[in-house]
Length: 114
Image 1 (cartoon, rainbow, N blue to C red):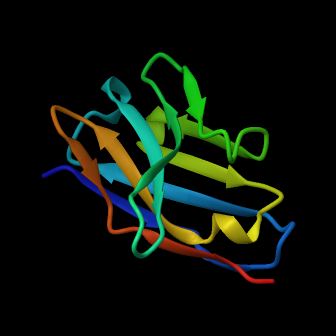
Image 2 (cartoon, helix red, strand yellow):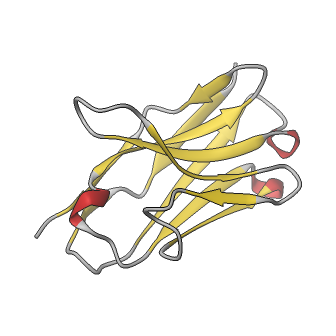
């Protein structure tokens, strides 16, 4: 029933910007923490940013000051604004909802090409 669908990924040059969107459905998203994770092939999935139902945000040290996570509860959406992108930001980005168990979407590819 719970579903998350990411969009907005693509190819950008270092220093560029990109905004990812995640549409949630099948649950009352306003009651749960939402987050963005990312994964490079062969490496563990890692936290990028999270935002709680009360509005607290956390960021990975590697993206702090460059990325901003926001949510629109009325639209059941969460966003990730990515600025000053670096080659090391290249990964598949996944939207996550922390329900009784964590649920992820299928991911969207972000490639920062130098």
